[in-house]
Image: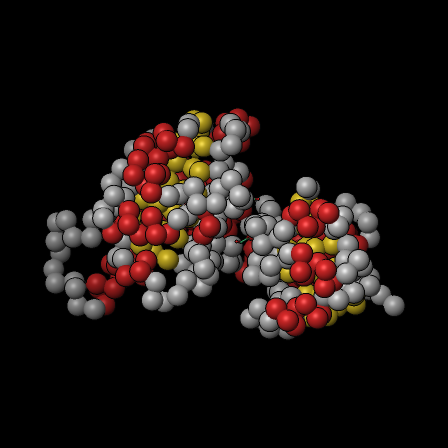
Length: 324
Ligand code: GLV
Ligand code: GLV
């Protein structure tokens, strides 16, 4: 009998087709757009050789113990891997697939859209237009901040940060700066970005885009110390993970006018409860984690996740393996 793989979500067709036509595995699918209940997941992974998951599933010791020693590969349909307990996977010798690169363009496009929506107050503006606030044309009404001649700061320079900068450059950005655990000259060169300290990033950025992975080191680094150093005309953008931000501190910075606005595609928790204080702020634009959500990209992510899984189960090099 073929090795069994559990697929925790109705992933886009390209990926499912690859698994179905492979004749290499037997698929067990949670055939829904909503997450599999934890108890169901713990039952279904028992004895599986492979697991294809998405970012709502915690892949931790409990789950890996429930799966048992047959589990060889965990393939996540995401570039982020903060939902995986890396130590536990490593300890068990389980290989990990993920989906970098295929989503870079989609995430960069959405980040630019969110940045402009926030800095030029688009959500507030459409609301005014349709609810009677549009009394007349007014000189400073709904004014925002422009990219031309600005300094854009990137917190965590990877492929996505570079792709965002490449797209912002034609808007006549004056200067790109970035910080990371260490300089990344090979990436920075393409966008002529200057490496600065976290303090300088906060001080100089007119737009600060968070593009780092969520790790123990980046957890909560966007906190009141950082916001206090930012200009009160600055815009904060996060399309990485909510955990990088201390949301109470962000709320205070936004409501007190310490910073001008924030655009968030990611929050803690997700979904953010509809009664969350951040939703009461006009200068905070919140999206429901859609940065990679284009048809092309989500299909490519599912195909890559399926190919990672199959290659890993064959004991071959995966197209995109997360090496620990
Ligand atoms: C989305 O957030 C991803 O990690 O792919
Ligand atoms: C960004 O870091 C990516 O993996 O695409």
